[in-house]
Length: 248
Image (spheres, rainbow, N blue to C red):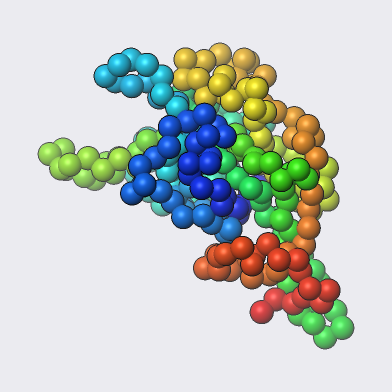
C-alpha cells in the first residue's frame, strides 16, 4: 500500500512539469514532507470545459481517500486511499472512475515501514524508509478521482462538492520491494495525455498505459522516525536515520 508520501514542489513548477494550468495563488497547497490520508493533495486532471467544450488540464486540490458518489458519508474515504491494480477495474467504487476519471498525483517519493524487533534493551519500533527515483525526478502516481456531495444536504442548500482521489498500487520491485510488497503505480511521461484523456474509456487500452515500475530505478533509505507521527512535517523528515534509532 501507500499510506504516506512527500510532495514539496511549488504548484507553478508542477504545472510546468505536467503541462497543466496552475491554480490561483489563494488555492495553493503548502509543500508537505508527510502527506497523510484525508489530506488535500495535488492532482492533475483533465476535464471538458462546459463553456468552450475544450479539454482543459489543470492542477487542482483533491482530498486523499476516494469517496464514491453513492457513499453516505465522507469518512469512507479514509479506507479507500489505495486501489489495487489487479482489481481496480472490477471494484464497484473504482470501476467508473477507472473509465471516466483518471488523474496523476505528483510526488517526490513515498514512505514504507519495516518492523524492528526489540533488542539489547531497546524497544521495538517501525523503521521508515523514503523511496524515490534515483535521479530525483518527480513521480506521477496513477490515480482516480471522484466527486461527492453530502446526500443529507437539503435540495435547496448550496451544494458543497468534494473532489476525492485514490492511488493505484502494484507489486513492489527494485529497492521498494525490499521494504514492502506493494508500491504506488506510476505513469510514464509519454502516457500522461492518454491516461488523463476523459474520452478514453476502453478498459484494455487504459490498462495498457499502466507503467512498469521497474522502468525507473528507485532508492530506499532509512529516515528519522519523526515521520511516523503525522503531525510532524518539514524537510528534516528526510534526514538519514541515526545508526541506533528507537521510537520516541
